[in-house]
Structures are given as C-alpha cells and as structure tokens.
Amino acid sequence: MKKSTRTVGPKGQVVIPKDVRDETGLVEGSEVSVEAKNGDVVIRRVAPPTGSYVDYFTATYARKVEQPVDVKRIIGEEDDGRINLR
Image (cartoon, rainbow, N blue to C red; front, side):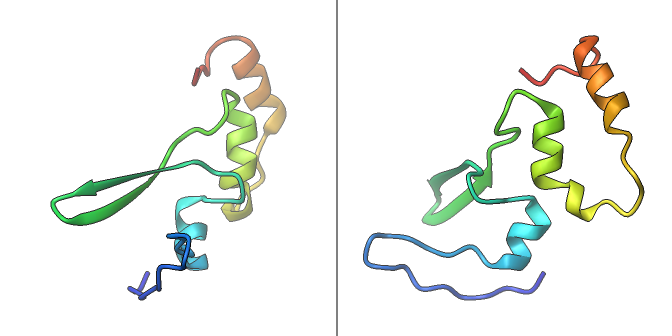
C-alpha cells in the first residue's frame, strides 16, 4: 500500500482509500475506533463487527480468498461452539 493524502471535510469526515479498505476488510457498516495518540490520529478496525464469524468472514475476507471456502463446515464449527467470537 502506498501512502496517500486526504482532506478533512467540513464535518470532520475523511474518506479511507479503497486500497486500504480492501486490505483491512473495511466495508460499508464496518466499525472503526478513532483515537489521538502522541499528536497523531489512529484509526483501527473493530473486529469482528458481529458475533458470527461466518457473517464477519463473508462481509470482509470472502472476496479475497483464492480457494473455495467450506461455509457449511464453518457454520457447523460455530454451532458446535468450537468457534466463538462473542
């Protein structure tokens, strides 16, 4: 990822570049935390935005996967309690 400069809008809004959104899995509705640290602004993705790993995965990383994903297995593991992100 290359660095880019953005301008703060009149309401304090900043557009996060598409390459950064893609790299970090940010999609519309994703939550981020914003903090001031040593004079800098730090934006972090809040993960996962949902209690379901399957929902989180399909909303963020599924587009980037180069191999098929066995969603039924993931759902089974989540239902069995082997995956718990709550």
